[in-house]
Structure formats: C-alpha cells, structure tokens
View 1 (tube, one colour):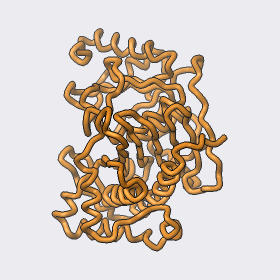
View 2 (cartoon, rainbow, N blue to C red):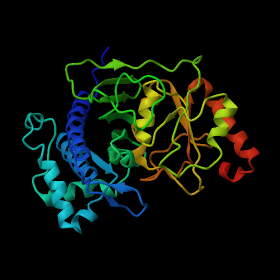
View 3 (cartoon, rainbow, N blue to C red):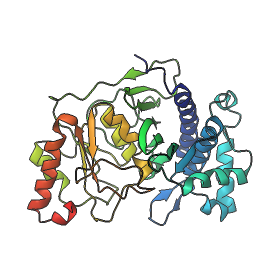
View 4 (cartoon, rainbow, N blue to C red):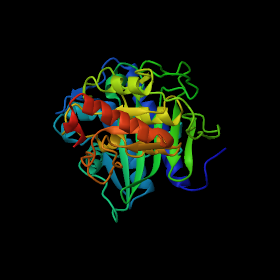
Length: 361
C-alpha cells in the first residue's frame, strides 16, 4: 500500500537527497580518517556531517526556495580551517558525477564559499510557532558516536509547519527493513541495503528500501492496545540520563530492560514506528538539560502516526517552537496511546519514591 498523493514533491526530494547523503556517509565509514573534530559540548562531528548538511540544504533550497532551514552544524570550524573545508568539499564532489546526482536526485553547492553559506543558513535558526510557515529541520548524522564505530546511525529530515510536525523522513543507511526483535547499535543490515521510514501527519507512517526506488512503500501497522510493552532506550556511550531510574521504571511495568539499546534518538523513533519497540522513557540527569530539535523534529511523527503518544516527563506535549533546544520540555515519555498514562504514572511514582521530586517540578 502506498502513501496518499500529498507532499509528493517533498517526499521525492527527500528520498533522492537521502540516497545521495547515504552514499556520502558510507564513503567516510570506509575511510580510515573520519575527519573528526569535537564541539563545545564534547560531541563529535565529522566531515560527513558538514557535507550532508550542505547537500540537504542545497537540495531543498533549490526545490523550495521560500522555505527556511534548521540544521545541527554551522560553518565556523570550516571557515577557520582550510584543510577541513577542503576535505568537506572533496567529499561532496565524490558524488558530483554520480548518475543519480546527474539525474537530479540532489543539488550540490558550486563553490566552497557557497557550501559554507548554505551550512550557516541552518546553523543558528530554529522553527517557531504559529505564522512561521514551513521550516525544514535536518540532522545530517544522528548518532555520530555509533557512526564512527561502523554501527547504526540515521539522517533526519523533518518538515515543521507553524511549529507543528507535518512530515518526517528518516534515512537509516545500515538498518535492515526486516529486523526482528530487540535492536542494538551493532545490528547493521547484513545486506547493506538500508531503509527509509517516513510519516505524513494524519496519514500514517510508511517504510521503504533506501536504494530500490522500484519497491513500493508499505504502511506500518498501528500500535495495538493489547501488545506487550517493549523498551527502547540507551545504556551505553551516552551519559545524559538520570542514573537508577529507567531500569526501575521498566521493572515496575514488568518490562525487560534495556530492550532495544540505541544511541541515536532519530533511530529510536524510527525503531518504534517499525514495531521493534513501543515504549521509551528518558529523564535527563540535570533539570537544565534539554533535547535538541534536530534529534526529534519530524522523527517523533513516525511513532505518533503508528498510534504512539509522546510527552515530556511532566506529561506536557513536546513544543517544537521553543528553539534549537526544546527548552519548554524536560525529557520524554512515549508509549502506545492506550498505555501512556500508565507509563507516565510509573515514572512519577519512581521519581517520588527515590526522593527526586525536583525532576517533576
């Protein structure tokens, strides 16, 4: 079953761009030197992050010149480091003569300066609320830590209209569409095909092959009110979670922990849409720690369109208009609609019993 005949241009633009972005990212995985630098928050960024953001913005700006863009990176490091800028430029040009690029699957910047300008167009902006129109949010590589290890990662494209999720298209270059059971960071697609998971607000979520354009998309089934809860979380490589809470919540709910153990948030939302898991809880270790827009905007829609409900730890809807960081919300609680209240109550009960009431204020 295919998706409805709406957002056709947006989806085709996203599919083509993801196909080419995937090729760029896989080229870097195959090389010894990933061109890694460390940002102020100590998270790693590679030349692939910069190249893919430039590719995405160039492609979508050409297709939708009136829209605005949000992306994780800015070009300050590139402008300050000629060698790094040249490596990003060279990486982009590896696909310039690619058959898909020549056929218009993506657009590439014409000069290094234009490349930096394009990256900067998204490096400080954010999606606002009512009246702000169409804003594309990009995460060029979500899960850089796992990406650098040759493990699972994702590329996120979200369309936010007046502060609301309208379209989410996630490329998973090394995730099998047919994976069953709990998912780990190391569970890469043995056939190397990858997949795209996408959703249209009010019309459902779908999955398709990343590279096989002839394969029809399949609509993903809705969450069942009677199915068992299955956790998706992260217990390794990331230290932003409040210790001693998540496994206790799972135990309270009678759910095995960790279930699926994944670093990239975008991939967690995609996995939940695919039915690999259906519940996630995330309480940050500090009350002033907030999620980043590009890790969630658009990607959350995948799970919501399969019948999932997502709030923060306080039970509030996620406000994507707050800025580059989702500073109006604290953490996440997500589960099938029918059991969300039960999961939220378990989180509150555990925090209160542990004397951590401050995280509920």
